[in-house]
Amino acid sequence: MTEVKGHGRQKGQTEIYRGAEYAVNFLPKIKIEVAASGDLADKVVEAISAAAKTGQIGDGKIFVLPVDQVLRIRTGEKDVDAI
Image 1 (spheres, helix red, strand yellow):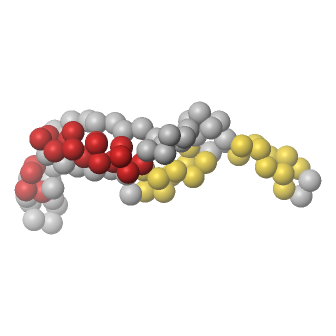
Image 2 (tube, rainbow, N blue to C red):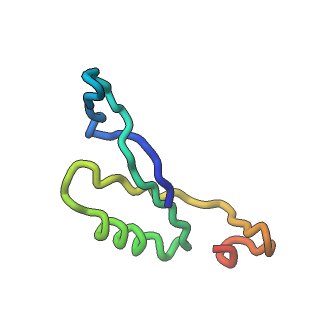
């Protein structure tokens, strides 16, 4: 999980500080990255979607991407063993 900044349909916001108006184009967001074996991908997507859905703008998006190789540097384990 990573704290990031960005905007989607919210398009940022305008704030007033010491009488001056400032456009805040980036809003605080949370980025979650999950690596799972292919047979669990649908279940992971369903779980994240169910937990994150509020029905409001800003719920986020889920991207499902293939991972060609995983290597745990410390032990040398590869692929499923490294997850």
